[in-house]
Image (tube, rainbow over the protein chains, first blue to last red):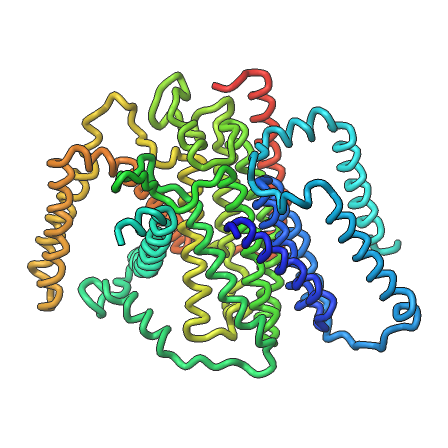
Length: 166
Length: 411
């Protein structure tokens, strides 16, 4: 066992446990906190693969901005503890088998892929931020700008929806 | 034993550095409270703390003991886990951010190892700091929410909104510097400011605030203002506006949990001061051109007179304790100043840290100065100021700098 591998498993466990806790927690704030743990652990995994910039952006955008907004809204609405209902019939009969099948399918695909034998990819070649920005702003500049345009439209839509009726 | 130490030198050096930095930062924090109280007191024509120890110098120690031994009640109905998590989160994140900062240019050589001043020298130093800052909001927001009390909740909401709003400006205002330096590494950013700047002169004219294709004065003003808001200090300390919200998000915290928020706030003040001097004021670079070699004696020129003054002042202090301890401290400082003159190698090594610490001290003083003189913003004014003035100004700064770099090339 080398150190990066141990760190990988610790972060992976944090991710999975955080995700499970996100679903099982009954209070919205606790769920949001679990999601933050998932985000930060994911950033750690990116860092382990040498993607420093992506890791930092993951924390700044998802861990910081988006989740702060979540927590803020939950605080503002003062959302209480959720009630738990019994599982719906559809979820029992269709959902659980489908979830098991999907997990099995994904695990099989990952196990068969060529990279699986090498274990987790560990900071071999650090991808410089420059390469990433070249890709984003030169090779894929039109898709990138289109995406930002889409987000702008979404923001405008939110403003229109939030306006009081005249 | 020696063999074992050599094998794991990297890890051991890092652990020792972390322990040392923690000790230094916490001590500086403690004396920052003393410094703040003294300066604000003198601004308001008072004496400030002067009962505990000579010149009140033991006041931080007394305060620390008080924090440790005070009763620590947990209010009823708090969300236990989050209530305990919030101060921990605030303190841990604030202390982590200091670890990214490099404190000097040259490494120490010890048994074949190069020991750099600073714990982690990251390629993405600036981004890592912003990532930590982005998470810092949670300490405040969660503290306010978990306390099960209306004033903390309102304070927490206010501060989350404020921190999210000003974080945008904070990030935008450094883009100009990053463009000029074309690197995220704090070390590269500092080294980039050494070269010929305004009028082709070195020294202070190379710093980002004056040099580059576009001097980053707007960037610096936006950055410092946003940073003050981000650290919840006067005049942006709305989260703890005592006349409206008691003590804001930490109303329900007592004893050491309160102290943790307090230490976190002062630590982020230090981090912001470090960042300001690194990004805009050349970090550890001397403001004088490299040709002026006599400026290397500046640390001694400052240390020796202040040491002598401390001896003279201590001799006629009222208490016997003061008459013993002040001259002793003064003697140590004087000897240090003389030692720097006698040992040129040591003197050359401390030049970087000396300038860096001096700049940090100036910014900390500005923090305290503002607290002593400025009134608090109203909440709507705060939001309008952040969104309508600071953010457009920082965006304009980005556009101008980028255009000038594109057409004029790097200076």
